[in-house]
Amino acid sequence: MRIFMFIILCMYGSCLIAQQPSIIVLGNVQDGGSPHIGCTKKCCVSLFQKPDPERKVAALGIADPARKSSYLIEATPDITSQLRLLKEYSQTINDIPNGIFLTHAHIGHYVGLMYLGKEALNASQIPVYAMPRMKTFLEQNGPWSQLVNLKNIIPQNLQNGVAVTLSNELQIIPFQVPHRDEYSETVGYKIIGPNKKALFIPDIDKWEKWNQDIRQAVAEVDYAFIDATFFDAEEINNRDIKEIPHPFIIETMRLFEAMPASEKRKIYFIHLNHSNPALLKDSPQSKQILKMGFNIARFKDVFKL
Ligand SMILES: [Zn+2]
Ligand SMILES: [Zn+2]
Ligand SMILES: [Zn+2]
Image 1 (cartoon, rainbow, N blue to C red):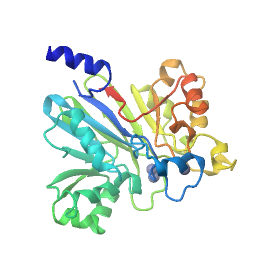
Image 2: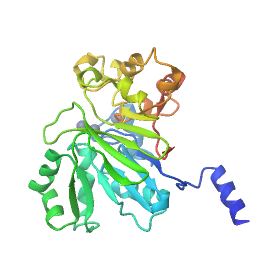
Image 3: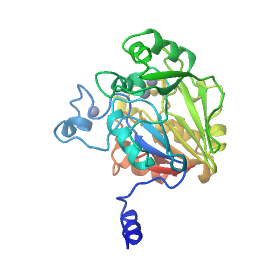
Image 4: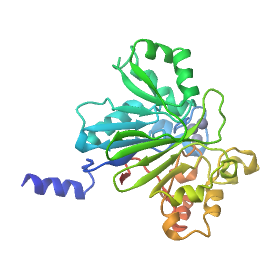
């Protein structure tokens, strides 16, 4: 009877439990979140009155239920609820992940670390994986240095292109990408599971600035969560999209236009600005993305590895 109830619950989507190594989308919004500070436009105005609980800053969770392990990619301002969701999904004993992987030092990607300190969780020795500049930035600047000194976090060195082995079934590889690198390098991650691979590039300058071909990078994986900060020129008041250092969704779709449907299908747009109409599931732009064979990463989406 209990098993039957469990199956019924799962069929109706109220059970979200990892059965095998997998990724869960913990957020899909750009650093500033949604509603966005200071925004008086249509995209946010009603959200100030009635926040949408699915609007969380972009992050991925990795669950490894057989080992009762979980990993968080990005420490966002929404880390509190994201870690609870990851715990529930990965069936770990508490909200503390086995490691946190950071991409770079822009607010949506690392400031959630502040909740691990004395004023909040007062965590004990959470491994935080960061590239050399990012690691030094944390170690040498308050308030982050206090987390290091009090051993709330233990910074772990990443190297460009060098895999970190999480278990005999899971590996994660950082790779450097071009972006505004004021305080740190910026990396994307390749996540390698027992059966499937995923790419995560939440922030990058135009694809042509990268020393790799995104089409080739997508060809080597099964899922690709990639920078979709802006949709098109209309969203930015018809400014020249060439001036904005992100690949616009329409630019990425054009780049993949001639690729087979099986390649387009791997792409899940993530890191959407508050102004991006693709944040709304039923907007014409969301429908256009799906119609053209691409996908949008949505809160609580799950991907088997
Ligand atoms: Zn960002
Ligand atoms: Zn807005
Ligand atoms: Zn950034």
